Image (cartoon, rainbow, N blue to C red; front, top):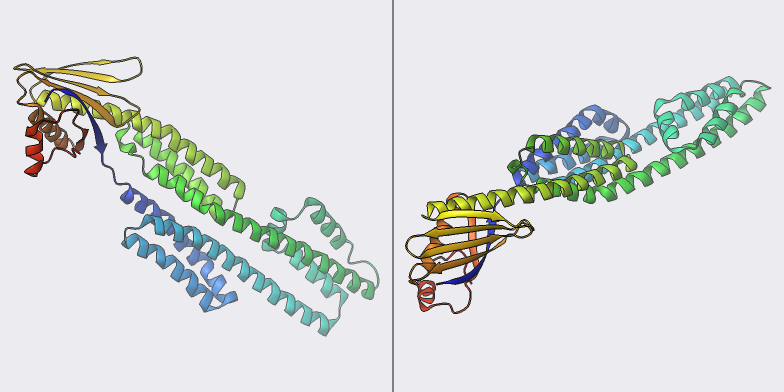
Length: 370
């Protein structure tokens, strides 16, 4: 059957195994977190809170066993929010407990020196300092440090009054910093789906087809590591930048992969035509379209146009005797199938001959003809 044809060439790729490997790598970080901070959470929040964290981590393993990377990455993002909130709650429980104990000691001893020492203790606490330095204003920190240094002077009653006032300012600043930290944590959690979308987009790229696949993987791993560190540290700015960088990398390599797949597809079609007994000549037009001109004996030719902007290609099969068109297309489909590609005919052209209808009625595959 002579005349123009159109077809779509599909190259299969399953990103699931690579994404599951990424998920296992990320999940190992939560194992280390539980090993390091689990006893702290258990001590200050109880066994139930620790068990909830362990159960949340176990859900990732269930997703891995079920082959569900989407569910696993969702669990992974939720887990960091749960873990960090548990740690903050434990730290807050620790602070509240220590504060209550200090208050009891103040009631018993009623000593100004003790009040001053307690103020210095909470001020010098590493966790409090880390929280305040990140979320409190420099002016507030300077004011607290200056007023703390002047507490030791004056009568005991005055020292107690000033110490209590300082403690109130400190707790207010610490509460404001905690609220800011919690708001930031929620903002980070809200970006987790965007991060997963960016990682998924990279995971779906058939990067192995590229000559610089190793460089792509290194850059992908570096950006994913940076994003993961930003989630762990709850660094919203770095997380924003990392998501943007991941999306930019996906855009750059999506174009490279598309070009490489097009080159692979054109080479595959050229090879398939040769194996079908054709002599093949090719040329590349100004727009990047590759034209393959195949001739065979007797009186047969196949012209193929492949546009780099689409998976669809045009075939023009000419057979002066009119007896080999369907077989020629089927032979081309078979040769491409041997190379792991599917040629699906979506339009057989005008005037479908009776012979094609008979093939369809007999249930013969024509590579997806409709």
